[in-house]
Length: 253
Length: 365
Image 1 (spheres, one colour):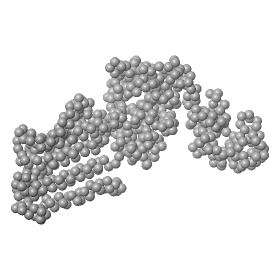
Image 2 (cartoon, helix red, strand yellow; image 1 turned 90 degrees about the horizontal axis):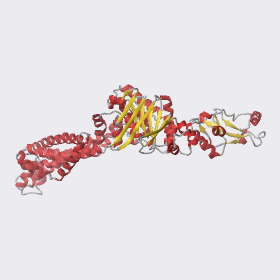
Image 3 (cartoon, chains in turn purple, red; image 1 turned 135 degrees about the vertical axis):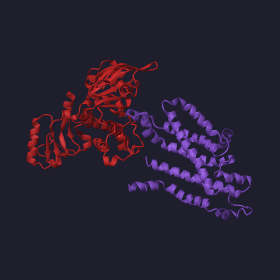
Image 4 (cartoon, rainbow over the protein chains, first blue to last red; image 1 turned 60 degrees about the vertical axis):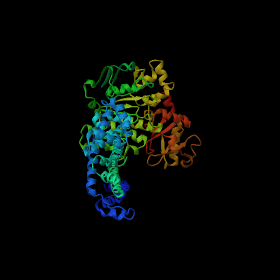
C-alpha cells in the first residue's frame, strides 16, 4: 500500500512541481491587488490605475469558474453520451454524420460561435455558457468516438464471448480502455473553454475577460495583463489537475 | 451434449455453413478442422450465439440455445480466441475472474479459484496475479486466456485456434499442459484449428469441414487410417503414419530397463552383463546414481568382462538422448533417427530413470 503511494507520487511528480510553482503565483496575483502596481509601475509609469476597479479579481475568477464549470460539465455529459451512442449498434448509423459534424465544428473559430450565439440567445452569461458548451462538445465527442473505436475488436469479442451485455462491456471494458483518450478530449475542451470564456465579456458575461475588454477599450495594458495572466495561470492549473486525475485512474498498464 | 441439426449459415448469397449435423458428446474434445474459409469458426461461434444460424437447431444438453438469453448462455461456456483478448487494463487475476464476477460469486471463493487456476497452469499466483497482460509473454498470456475460460468451471469450452499465434516450442508445451488438464477435467470442448497435427494430437474426435460441409467426423485414428475420400487423404497428408505416432506417447511403449548403480561391485556387474548376453537386443546397461537418476550407460559389447564401471561409463546430454513419459512417439522416433540408436531411456523431470523404449516396438505399432 505504501509502495503504491510512493509510486503514484513519483508518477505525479511533474504535475506536483508545476502546481507548486503556479498555484502560489496565481493566489498572490489574485489576492494582493497592490502587487500589480508594484510590478507594472516601473514599466508602465503613465497609467492612472493599475487594478481593474469594477470587480475584485476573485469575483472575476469566480464568474469565470462558474461559466467554465457549467459549460464543461454539460459538454462532458452530452459529449461522452453522444460518443457512446454513436459507437453502439443502435447508433452506428449516426456515426458518419456525427463525425462530419464534429470535424466541421472544429474548423469554426470560437469567437464566431459566440457571435452567432448572441442573436439567438441575447447577451450575458447564458449565451456564453451555451456557446462554450457547444464548442466544448466537439473535442469530447471526437475523442470519445476515437477512444471507443480504438478498443481492439478481439477485446470486445472476448467480452461478448464471456457473457458481458453491451452495457457491461461498455462499463467494464470499453470505457476504462478509452478513458485516457476521452480524458485528453476533456482537457482540450476545458482549456479551450477557459480561454474562450474571456471573449464572453464582449457580450457582457463578466469573468476574466472583463478587464481584458475594458483594458483594450481604455488602452490600459495593466487591465489586459490582469485578465490574461490570471486566465492563463488558471488554465495551466486546471490542465495539471485534470492530468493528475487521469494519471491516478490509469496508474499503470 | 452439444448437438447441431441441419444448421446452415449464409451471409447474403454466400453459404458459410450448409446443413451441418454434428454431435459432440460429453467429455469429448472435438477438433473442427478444414482449410481457411471452410466455416469452422462460424460453426464454433454459433454454439455460443456470437453468430446466429440462418436455419437449423442447436441444442446443449437437450435445450435449444435459441430459447436461452445469449449472455447467460455464454457465461456457462468458456471461450478462448486466438488473439486471446485479455483485458489490458485488468490484472491477470481480474481477467480470470471476469465470468465468476458476472455470475456474482463471493469474493473469497473467486480469489481462491483464481489462485487455483494459476497453479494449474504453472503460473505462480504470488508472481502473476497482480501483473497486467502487457507484462506477460505470449505463452503466459495464452495460458491466462485458457484459465479465464475455465474460471467459472463451465461444462463446455469453445476454443478458436487458441495456440495458433504461439511459436512451435511454446505451442507444444501448452498443448501438453492443456491435454493433461483436459484428461483431469473432462470438459466438453469444441476446438477450431487449421493444423492437422494439432487436431490429431488433441482431439478425441476430429470433424473435417470443407466449404461449410462436414466431410468426415471420426476419431483421429480412423481419420488417419481410413480417410473418407481423396480430399481427406490430401488434407491429412502423406505422412499419415507419422501423424498417428503423434497420438501415442512413450509411456504406451514403456519397458522396464536394466540398470546398475554407480556403486555396483565388479563381479556383480559382470554377472549383469552375462544376463544381458542371453537377451538378444540389449547390449548395454543404464547407469544410475543412488537416487535412481540416470547418469549414462555402459556398453556390454567391448570387453564386457574386463571393463570397470568407471572406465566404461558413457555420459551424454540428457536433452538429446532421453525422452519423457509424456513425449509423443513421433518425438521419440525423431530422436531414434537423429541419434542412430535402437533404444532410448525414459526419465522424469528429475532425470529419474523410469524405463526404456525400443525402436522395434515403435515400428510394430
